[in-house]
Amino acid sequence: MNDLLLYTLETFDEIHRRQNSIIITFKGSRKVLSTSHLNGGYREDLTAVFNHNINSGLGLKTDIHPGNYREHMSLVATELGLKPQSSAGLLTAASMENAALKTDSYEDLSVTAIVTAGIDYNGGRVGDPASFHERRGEVISLPPGTINILLYINADMPEETLVRAMVTCTEAKTAALQELMAGSCYSNGLATGSGTDGTIIIANSGSSVKLFYAGKHSKLGELIGLTVKAAVKEALYLETGMSPQTQFSILKRFKRFGLDAESLWKRYSNKQLAPLEYTGFEYDLACLDRDENLVVPSTLYIHLLDQMNWGLISPPQAARAGKEILARIMDYFGLSPKTDYFDGENPDCQHDPMAWMIENYVRMLLDLIAYRGNKIK
Image 1 (cartoon, rainbow, N blue to C red):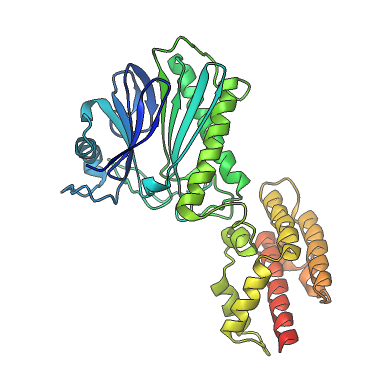
Image 2: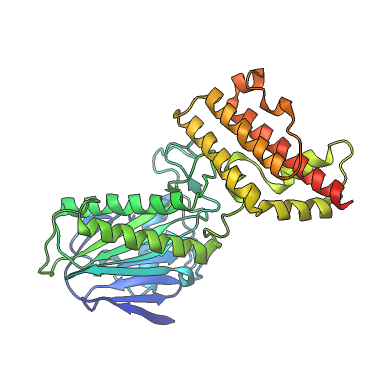
């Protein structure tokens, strides 16, 4: 069996990568709180935890479905050489080779996070429209995009503190996504996680360090935040290429609002006197996509959309500020603003201000592409 020792913790517990799984085996008594469907919840009788890639090809003869989820997890544990009755695990479509491991410490306290992550196809914002309703065991699915976290804390703590540590861990995951401006796949909001995320928190029962607080004001909370945020960001980069650099893109920023190259080309090619064929259009869009003189003000425009969506500013206020941003962009690129972009009294603006503002941005962008095409031509 392919087995690679990745890290040995201060407790001599070992972190291995085995059969496209990450496994932590315990050398002593541990307190575990997890979202696992196998021995999940709060346990003190576990000997190992794991994070497993569902496409690893272990040779299991059963396909996972709602009726056999726990059975499938038991078979995975057995194939990994673990005892199903004393193991808890998570499943994901992410590769374990792309797992990120981060550790931090303060005095005699240490925290280690091992994360696999993807957000491209399953990222969502809490409160987004649901994709299923559970009835009599329905429905369990694992689309690509799961963020799984194994968080190891070398300190003892009561059950309630372990639960608070999971809350802080979840906040850290969401903060990482917010800092990357990761969009939801189901709405125009920013993602707060994926719909299938899993978390396992491990505390060292044998530690002489006993902690009672894991919120943001505590040092433990700070270390959880630092390690989880860093590990989530690194795992997203390793699995999907997401990073601050790749997110510096108008197409990436506007993806959650339905703007992509295909829809832009469809609109552009229907315009009269469009000067470019598709290859030219694609080239000019690529040039504009990462032009800082477009990306930076466009980011401000998007922030207006978010603020309006959250009720922090009114549609007329967003429309007025958006008008100034689009005018500045066009002026920089040598174009005269078209006044019909900015008519805040337009019935379309009153009826659906979000769609109206996105439409104005698209029209501005198409005019920029056409202008570039005409200049080159």
